[in-house]
Image 1 (tube, helix red, strand yellow):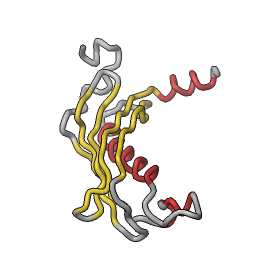
Image 2 (tube, helix red, strand yellow):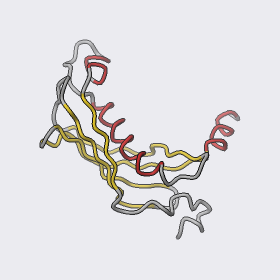
Image 3 (cartoon, rainbow, N blue to C red):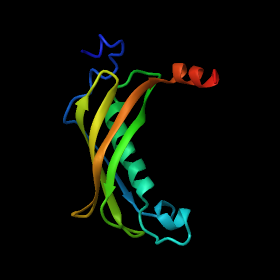
Image 4 (cartoon, rainbow, N blue to C red):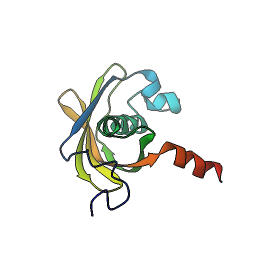
Length: 138
C-alpha cells in the first residue's frame, strides 16, 4: 500500500539507502558515571541510542512538511565496547525500509575503526498540532 493510500504520504520522499551521521566527542555528561557515580566514566548506552536517533532524525526531517516531526517507536541495539571521555564517536543511520507510517534504520556507532554499537531503529511521523491536542485531552 502506498503512503498516499494510507492517508499519510509524508514519507513518500524518504528513500531506502539514504544515510545520516552524527559525530560527537564524549564528555563527562555523556557517561554512565554522570548518571550513576559508582559506574565508570564511559559513553553511556542511553546516550549512544540518543545519538542513533539523532542521526536517523536528520534523514527524515528534511523531507517532512511543516508541522510534522519524527518520533522514536522502536530501538533494538547492542553496545559492544566502551569509549572513555575524550573519545570521538561517529554514529551512522541508513534507511532500510519505508512504510506508510514509519521508517526503519540500520544504526551503527564507531570509535575510530572499532564498531562500538549496532542495531535497528524505527521512527514514525506525527503532526505536532494533532499530537499535542491528543495529549491535552488526557
